[in-house]
Length: 121
Figure 1 (tube, helix red, strand yellow):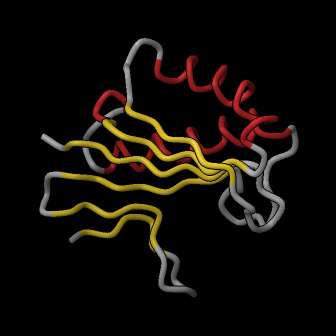
Figure 2: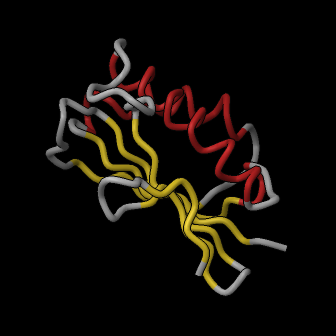
């Protein structure tokens, strides 16, 4: 395994590469170095999550089109899914990622947490 963007103070990483063939990444709407999500609600947090995802993908040598599955954790799935869907469409275009969305209670005032799996060449 190869861990990417590991926290030096706590045993957690933003991503891991399994057997050189699969990347799994988890991103949130909280920018690095901050303790709170970006302002602007679920859409702004989803944009921030994608901003964090891009360098993780690049470090693994792929881009967003290598993503095959996603899990979205939304603080209020019914209220936030439409805003998240608009950002999702802008990011992925017609790339049909398999996605599941769950309503959950998130920490630190977050509205969105996202987990992605990508196939590596």
